[in-house]
Length: 113
Image (cartoon, rainbow, N blue to C red; front, side, top):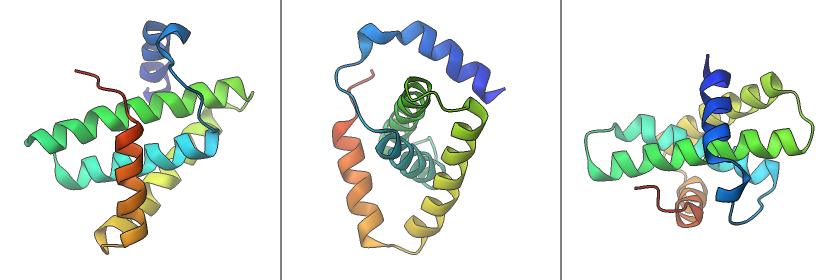
C-alpha cells in the first residue's frame, strides 16, 4: 500500500520538481529521521505538520533515489523502515547527533505548502 502511495506521488511530482540530487543514503537517513520526529511530535502543532511534510518529501526523495539507482522498491521501503525505527530510538533518548542531522534535513526540505 505504501509503495502505491509513493509511486502515485512520484508520478504527480515528476522529475521537474526535483531541484537537487541527493544520495540514496542521505535520503533514507532524512526520511527515517523526519518520519520518526513526525511520529514523536504528532500532527496537531505547526511543527508537527512541518515534520509530516518533511517526512513525506524525504520518503519520496528516497524512493526516487532508489529508482534511479535500480534498487528494488520493497528493499528501499525496508531501508526506510529500519531508518525510522533507529531514529525513533535515537531521538527518544535525546541523542544530539540525531537532532543535528534532523535540523539539517529540515533545512534541505523545500517548502511544500
